[in-house]
Image (cartoon, rainbow, N blue to C red):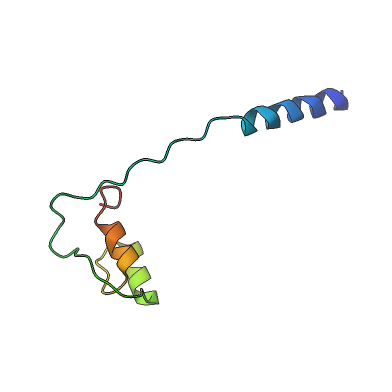
Length: 74
């Protein structure tokens, strides 16, 4: 019985590994973003990361501010 469980687990692991990977979707930016969310440059600080996670505009951080302009973030 233990052998059949091991074979079943091995077959499941093989099939799970062969599953097709989802395609990455294209990033969609807002056509008209809210005025408080504008793209800024620089390196993000700890406070900017906290603002980003809270859904508020960041003061610095080029990557975070660009992410805030996407459809998925809004």
